[in-house]
Length: 173
Ligand code: AR6
Image 1: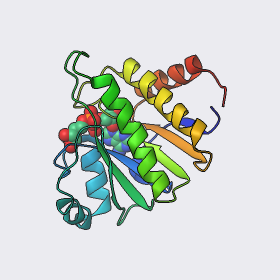
Image 2: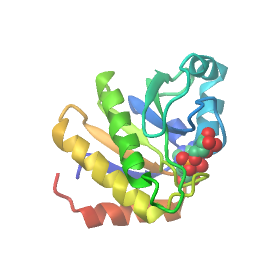
Image 3: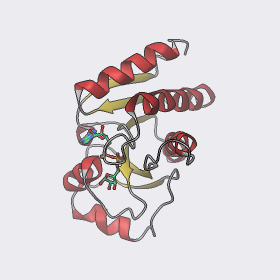
Image 4: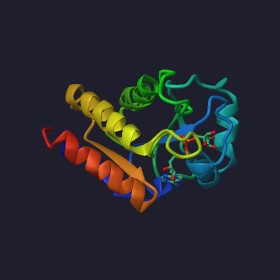
């Protein structure tokens, strides 16, 4: 999957058309990557988020990016890990699919994701990485207009897990 890249870094610095925020259903900011995105984008982001009326887990809503170097932020609340039998896998796949669909609908060609749900929401990272890579790969296969998707892993341990999952999935596309 040459159109899917895995890097280590800070997603707030990404110069992609869109970045994805691992948000919560209120869409009013929080800790982790959500906090970092709101701090870097500035207070206008929270003002726009207040107009959105929240977002269901697994769905995705876009905003402008304000002081960030990207064009759009796609906000998606990931599932909170609850042992794996509460539909978490399907909801996590929906986060990736719906975020990419929202970005494609806005004409974006490049999209960056953080590792959704694997921080505060405690989704096991190996399992999350396999789901993310499969969902992104499926979307790319049917959407040639998306040129590049970047998984931006904050720490080396997460980077290694996503690299292994990508190698496991093969280099087909
Ligand atoms: N760039 C890229 N990845 C980052 C960054 C960054 N600047 N900062 C943290 N990460 P989390 P979740 C990584 O907890 O599990 C918030 O309070 C982090 O190391 O941000 O989906 C929301 O408001 C981890 O690998 O998101 C929600 O309430 C990954 O991003 C809740 O947390 C996701 O960790 C969402 O929890």
